[in-house]
Length: 244
Image (cartoon, rainbow, N blue to C red; front, side):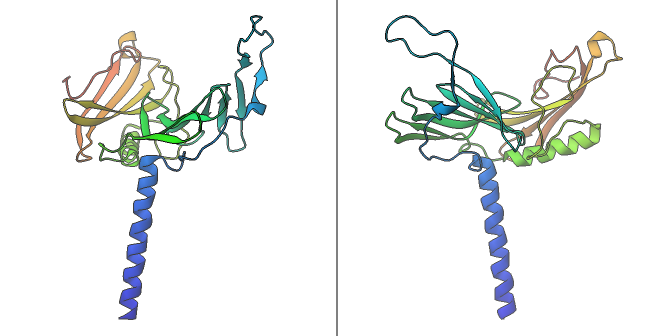
């Protein structure tokens, strides 16, 4: 009986940590939290040319820094943007003129869009609003990357797809890349996985090879797929609306 209770405890514990991990990934709590913070003015550098009018604000240069883990940080007197080396998300933070945090959130590297939690503060540094961009979505970003990885292997794409991979955010047609995005349409929610690969030897109307997969957010199931060649990467085809 003691052994059974012990095994039961282990199973429950593993389940708890797995759920906690999924929650962290879904809400991006591993990237940001709701703590108060201030802008580090020591990182800033005054621009060579300053305004001559009285009471004008000081002009600062935008400063870039690479830290030890490979992340790159863009500093200004009103915001920071942290370009993460690994994973699918970057961090953005806005600040008031007094240096207190104004807002902070995360955004998809490959396609503009907010994910996880957005925290907003008043000028005194008090948290005033929290927006959960995940509350109406059911399928986790990690699950979508797992589907993307299957298609990467099937079509032999080189672009990284892992949840913690080094993601290529350069969407020039000459790049082997993948975009993950999501959209809501008439009350339904969908995920899109879009692969791009250059085919230099092909004629102009087939310069890139594309694979587009649509996933139903409610069920996590794949709905449609298109595999086609494009004039560079100009004409996106939606598998839900087109047949080839």
